[in-house]
Length: 235
Image (cartoon, rainbow, N blue to C red; front, side, top):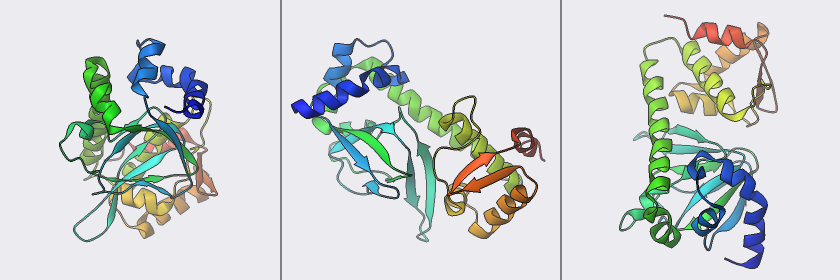
């Protein structure tokens, strides 16, 4: 690790140590996990890595957010997950003989990751059973959310949109905030729910007219969280 990279990582250490993946580890152990790592900043809508690309490194999200996207057989994008600070991207595939990225990761607003070489995973991360177990727990959490979304598949679209907004609000905002700090377009909502942009626009416009939400520069503010919760009770 270069001296400049080490200084950058030191700056983020208190925050990194608070992430669930690293809880209980000593600082020396945490620093070892980031051997030969480097910071990488991405602009809004910039691709961090592309599906099918050779995976030479994995990432820890420090700032901002990334949408993880796959394409259907029809060439339509489907958003599989929204990753936030503390999420580890593409770590477990590092142990594969010839890993390739299984999804495309695209920045949502200015974002920052710590890019970690595959060798560091092999030498350090993969040898720490506690860290591997916590990464698996992160992936299990993502799968659980996907299962919850599937359970809503037969419900009305408004219910699915409500679930997504509340999920993101819980994940990205503090308890005192009702504004999603990540830019979220109607198309991204549609891609995440497997719907059409036109259908999402109708719902969001209706909610805006009712004073349930408001949107400015793609940042959604939930003015009436209770009304959003009510949509989850629809049959």
